[in-house]
Amino acid sequence: MIQRIAIIGLGTMGPGMAARLARGGLHVTAYDVAPAAIERARAMLATAEGVLDALGIAPPSAGAGTVHFTDDIGAAVSGADLIIENVPENIAIKADVYRAIDGLIASDTIVASDTSGIPITQLQAHISHPERMVGMHWSNPPHIIPMIEVIGGEKTAPQTVATIRELIRSIGLLPVVVKKDVPGFVENRVLYALLREAVDLVERGVIEPEDLDTCVSWGIGYKIAVVGPMALLDMAGLDIYKSVSSFLNADLSNRDDVAPMVLEKTGASKLGIKSGEGMFSYTPEQTKTLQAERARKLVAVRRILEGRE
Image (cartoon, rainbow, N blue to C red):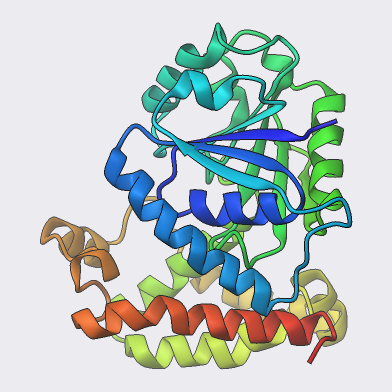
């Protein structure tokens, strides 16, 4: 039974993950190599806990869990039943983490990666007892989005997948088991297909970025939040899909490289909110309020989808 969890690497996801796991009654030790990241995570933890309060997510009857921060990786993993690796999307960096913890944990301790899309099978090559490694892909912001992908690699034991699936269910979240270890898993494959077409349409001058966002948010996004893609096929009619896709699929973007518009912006260090400019420009005041405003809206939408208006 999983009771103690170590999160290795905090970044933007770690504090929200820690807050949600603790609210589920679990005891979390959160580690990062950078003291500044730990201090930032402490502040983000309080914000995440406030959002969980707004969602009405109460701890189990046995009581709330705890979150403890440390810059000692040995202390972080000591006694952990589950380790969630949350370091940057680089196999070499992740492999260094696995080597660092390999001799510090029991052979049956589950090691989960929150990778956004690196195949778990590739990561298993860098750890002993690969049967205990699994993908546990949270969606950002992790304390608000209830869906978590669970991915087994070629050597992952079925029981490891089952254990993580049941853990997710036990704290009131929604596990989705990805049956094949494909790059990007499912959520990001669907998302990046949409983003590829969106960037292509803007780059070709078909639509302005603001109007594209309105089209997606208040068109397909609004609808898909209630009716998923497979159910939407049935709602529209497979005959209609067959007819439209017979000519539209051939005209959709199928590029397998990165769009020039994105390369130009990243080359100029226009990276988005983090740099003050990306597809849009952001003032310091907007940067401060945007995250809180989006969290407020996501909370409201989730409450409606769960029938808790």
